Amino acid sequence: IEVAPIAHYHMGGIEVDERMETCIEGLFAAGECVGGANGANRLSGNAIPEAFVFGDIAGSNAAKVRAASSTLSHQDSEIALSRVMNDLLQPAGSNIPSQNENSRRLLRALQKLMWKDVGVLRGTEKLQRALNEVRRFREDIFPSIRPKQGMAFNTSLMDWLDLRNSLLCAEAICLAASERKESRGAHQMDDIPFKSDKFTKNQIISSHDGHLVSNWKAVQKLDFDLKEKSLAVV
Image 1: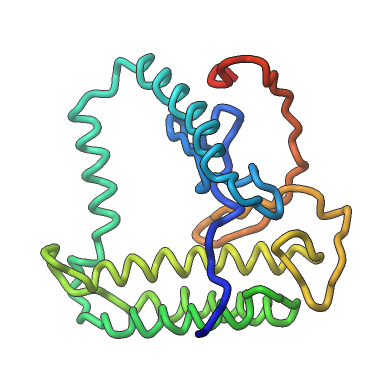
Image 2: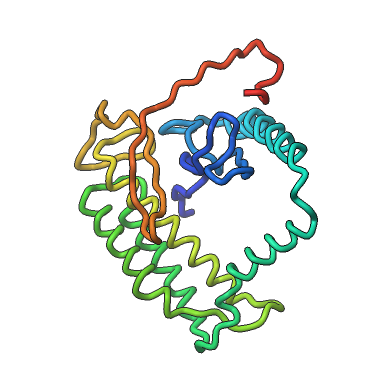
């Protein structure tokens, strides 16, 4: 029986404030799609209480924002949804011939690369090699891949979207890992097997003009009164 580790959860995620609001006004997030609650190593059993606590904060504040807004109509919501869908599905209407077989082949190559160079035990050279290769996949190969046209049972479109998202996540992971020159929690470097105090801070990966960049931010300490019945008012 083959036994191997798998990706079970993420310790990083979307940056939010104390109200669980993202940098997009009115957009809230909670649970394991949000980064920062677990530090460098999530303990078993944390996922459900994390979802309860931060889900309550996010939901309560989102409801308050929606209740205070009298300008958003159902028609506005439909227009916004239509724009998002058009952007998401734009490749399905392309006249470029379908190369769906490349979507799956490139995804398999990406998975092998991430397992080999960005897996359980990492190293400086391996991470830089993986980052360069992921960027080559994303910038040189992916733009030439298009799914088949049409919406009905279009599995090639699903493959294309899966690949697009996977490439973005892979580059963010490689960039973040390559710039953290230490071993901490689940991030273990075979050539830097120690923790460094200068990296005791949060790492923010953001997109600028289509390119991912890494920035550092001091750990923010918030005081919560755990005796209060509700934290949704923070």
